[in-house]
Amino acid sequence: MKLSDFDFDLPERLIAVRPARPRSSARLLLANGDAIHDRIVTDLPDILRPGDRLVLNDTKVIPARLSGLRHRHGDAGDTAAHIEVTLLEPRADGDWVALLKPLKKARDGEVIVFSDALSATVTGRADGQGHLRFNLTGDDFDAALADVGAMPLPPYIAAKRPADAADMQDYQTYWARHAGAVAAPTASLHFDAALLAALAARGVSFTHVTLHVGAGTFLPVKVDDVRDHKMHAEWGEVTQTAADEINATKTAGGRIIPVGTTALRLIESAARSGRVEPWTGPTDIFITPGFTFQMTDGLMTNFHLPKSTLMMLVSALMGVDQIRAIYAHAITKEYRFFSYGDASLLLPQVNA
Image (cartoon, rainbow, N blue to C red):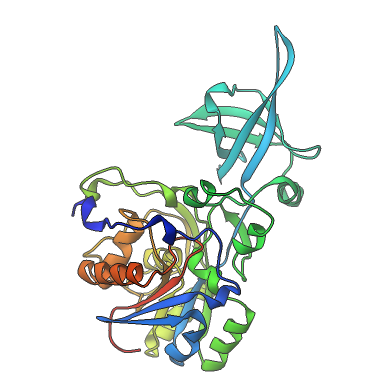
């Protein structure tokens, strides 16, 4: 498989920089086997069947973008300079891996001050990233970060506008619970209380799993042969309760439909035996055409970047030719793309 197999031309005007309001009013492309239909997210209760189970990622995005002053004492006396920080992931030793801009100006031992309450010491630099040790931990750290941090919008949005107060809610799912993600599971952004209630009344069930989405989700694929790509790892958890719920639905003949590629990757990581087993730890599962899905009967997802690992994942689910047809339809009909864009419901078999 070549990287060019997953490329397409996207008009820039179709890149969404704000979500639909209300969030459940976004458009929904329904791909049911080879058939394509134009719907709305609020149509989901009419599309799904009693007995279906949606798998939801309950990770919570942290306001990981920070602006601070790095302080240094040297021959010129005490000096301070502006620095931008994007938190990527916590390390086992309590430090955070982060992008520092400009990294080349940072030095080990320097203190970066973000507010009167929050500061961090540079403890190391490696692989184009910095390691930071904050002065606060636990709830105190979360509260201080919430006061000064901004949502880590994807690069294709951040290039067009800065994050603002609206993003603190817009870029967070309705059911966000476990803090740790630096990118949102964006298919889940389309759900609100009214839609969840309508789905429950229809007889659709929900299972929560956790996968902390990392900044690696935006990393480009740089190899021509996709088999040579090294997938980034992300931490996830499937509890015993979640595993039991998914397995019971599968046994009863209901469909398992992850909401978002993150939920799909996690349950497929946990289902190598043919049943979902409890899972805690990192997964670097890389799903490309030819992959055998153990649990997934469908997928609700947004529209993805050209030549991305997520394009490969949806191509594995629906087939390369059908995904090309779906994306050509979406562009012709001017669906809105990427994190704040419209949604698709991908059902490989005609059984909706």
